[in-house]
Image 1 (tube, rainbow over the protein chains, first blue to last red):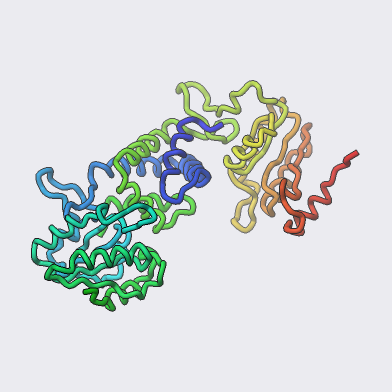
Image 2: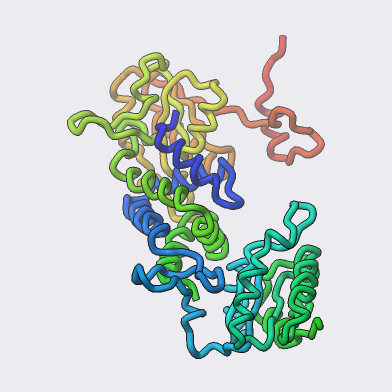
Length: 204
Length: 204
């Protein structure tokens, strides 16, 4: 009963996280019932996503693509006012954004992209440990703040990082568990996150 | 910390029904983390929405725009196998789709777009009553099945329609309200049970 192009759009939208077919259909019916401006602007922004945005080559955060011969660095990596001695390791870009909102991290970041997870078959070889070590080889970083979530996988990843970096001349700290166990950094409030960073403890 | 074009996309996506800023941000980060195929295809489909789809000029369902000089009619209005004597009045396109899935309506539809709602300031003058009456003036329709939801606003709208169409040579019926299929009497609310009993039908 629905035009085929609507069904195609519903299928595409239901690939978004947490969106099922019913929700996608609700989105599409809303988009059709609006004047053409919202779908048009959405289309424009989405079309430019792939060409203009890429992971930061240094930290994995989202970065805007600039001149073709320039390295793709995010705004935080480019920011000279950041403390070059502090490196905060997070699992996901969402976590980085949450910590930035707390304004408690003066340094830069390193986005792992995933956590150690025996259940999902994610082992140490799946984490960008070599990239992280090369970053440390640059010599400026004095402390690595491990801000993986206080979950089983997050703790396992923190311990792995502590072990991997143990022989280096760098402090490895862990954010305090002011964030409740099993909680998600993305949904923690700013004060909790701020306290967690201020109360970080040395791992080695 | 996020590139401005991402923030723009978050703002646009949070205009979708039931989507807040956090959810929109989750969508955007997912879209950026995927290969460029999903955003690109979404952009294409969205860009074509406004030019290819419009409300059916006859019933308000979604219709595909055809040749420029042809009226924009939906697939149901175009379908000659539909019973021309039956017209089912619904509040929203979603309700039309739900009824179509039940395969119990052989006739065509009329989408009101909204319900009478004193609380939201929606009065009779906000409903497309004149369009509905012009549709009945065509003379083929023998029965109007009012399928607005069994809520306060839905019942008020049904009563308004019954009153507005009373002087016409047309039957006006209302879909049955009662205990849903597979439902448990023990957990049905009082109003539902009351309606189920009032609407009882003779078995033999």
